[in-house]
Length: 121
Image (cartoon, rainbow, N blue to C red):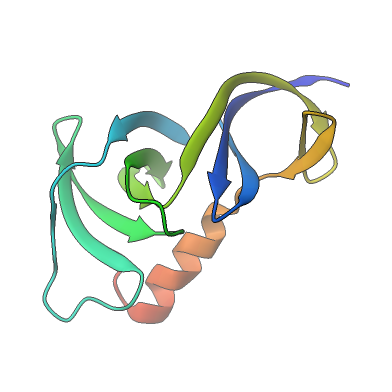
């Protein structure tokens, strides 16, 4: 097995893996400015790492913000609780963490939300 670097996070009780290439940073939840008439799932705009970014809810936790790279733009994911960063054994569809398959988080899920709601920039 080869190694995959990234972040294991918990999402409403289930663990997911975010590959290092998708994650820019992990920061404490900044102040989020709501967007008028924002669709469900879009929390608003926040300033983090010197950038203004759209923040999308992917779970119920609201303590940390995972800043991801989405087609070259910063995108904040709220609702993920970091568990561990490091290099893990790859497995089909994800990685092995604590002897269990941890699936790779699908950023396309977020993209589909934004495209369905017409919020993609």
